[in-house]
Image 1 (cartoon, rainbow, N blue to C red):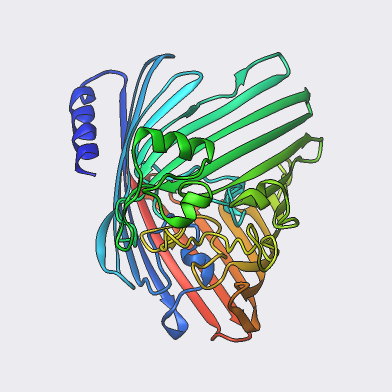
Image 2: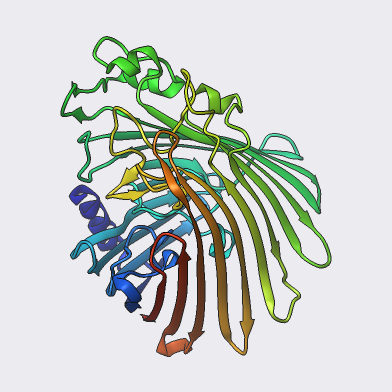
Length: 435
């Protein structure tokens, strides 16, 4: 990551005295209390990997800068480091990136966290495979900044990326290929439909058992199109596609009414041919989100149902998908020890789960509230089921107040209950200051 730091340093130096240059600095400290030496689930899940269940203190220093000359010359950059204790005590990179963008395209070099969607109420952040549960992946991403018009009623969305996993993992130097294609159909001013296909693939790297994995440009083409590996690949990759592949189909219908703006969405995961042909149905996420702009108390409401229990059955050539796990890439779909996708899947022990997710945001006398609760059944995996299965409830409440020029203060409360694990109560107090 040093090369990214040098690029950012040059960017800051070159724009420091420019009229079109803006920057802000944010410092934040947060303390945690949890019973049984652990915090509740939503204290550390989908927090970009900077917290764990045993964190007692968090400190963050963030610098963001932007340079805008015209509609075709815009830059943003960010440097964000944090210190936290807990399972691992260390200072680490959260975000470190530089971004160029114009009306239709943006390019990001480095590591940047995904945008928080649906006011942070969704269990997956509307992305089953990249929910914000782990630290941002370092690499290069080129994508649409705005939907590109094909016709007056039809727009296209796209993105392609190359990431390199620089953490401590079984296959050292694992690379990640990413691409997506989406279409947005504007039916009329109150109705629209968005459909997206996205695909991730882990490939390359040095396997301590089978050695260096195929990583040439020809191998990248095989990864891109999901073709089988050659004689240098592992036995599984020679018979199936090269690398560890996963992704999802996503469909969203948006409706505007006088009462609220609604989003009805469905996401279907896949890891092989059985998933792409829907043999793992009904696995996926069904959700509805309402934005209540005219309400005096509730600002948004959400309900989601998550099911990952089918996985194309218990056996067969394309059965027993065992989401986010892989025989060759044994660290699975993780980065720095955290699941990259939806946080209810715990690699490698728990991939079969059912969840009812309920949440809302509200405001009362300048105090913002966020509440969400998850009613969860954890079943383990097909080969190693939990006996008995775990029935749990994860509850979270956050209140935040801004003192304007004196900073922001927030309080978090959480309580987790389970039939096989100890209950956890937690409280957290955070203060942040911008200048």
